Length: 243
Image (cartoon, rainbow, N blue to C red; front, side, top):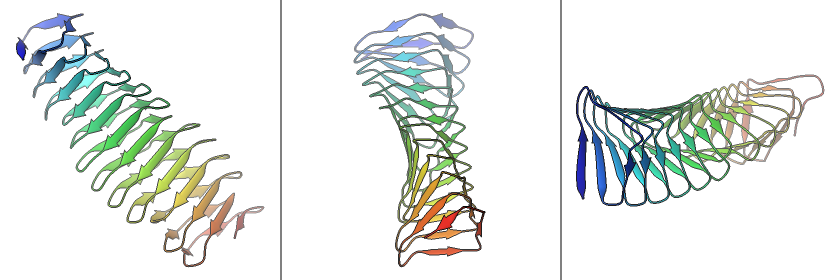
């Protein structure tokens, strides 16, 4: 693979990274509006910065620890590996962002797009119209799940402050934990693990499966609690139902 280095004090603009080429942005270097073609790669080293990159099918962007990228568009078939910091990425249908110990803020996951939040990673303030999966020791904070979107909290994963809008879903798997979720009218939560401090608005629905735990919920909508589930220290508003 051919390697091109962007050194400290240098800004590259509008480069197309062709197949077999790795554009390495070193500390103090900047890449603006690069397009990563199939078989090409951008590597953002510690102290390096990129903005406005477009990663097309078969292209890769790797954000190393200490590296930062903003405004990346991950097209169908494109992949971003985030070990550092990503801000304001858009994951298009068929695109994939893998947060692996990094911080992803303000990510927009489009319908058909996917964000994986792995151990040591934090995804915050995103809009999920596709799929966000929070794995063991990963954390999702203040996501808004729009119509057709889903946040899945796997065993050992944690979310807080999620808002599930009309047509959105949050699935808390066995061993997963969600706190402070708001399930708005038309939103649905599936709880197989643990939820704490949820607000189920009028028209919202939480389904609490056998073996699951829900505590300190404020129920103004409908909570369906199956045999073997536990719900405690929760308030039920006028017109709400727990069944």
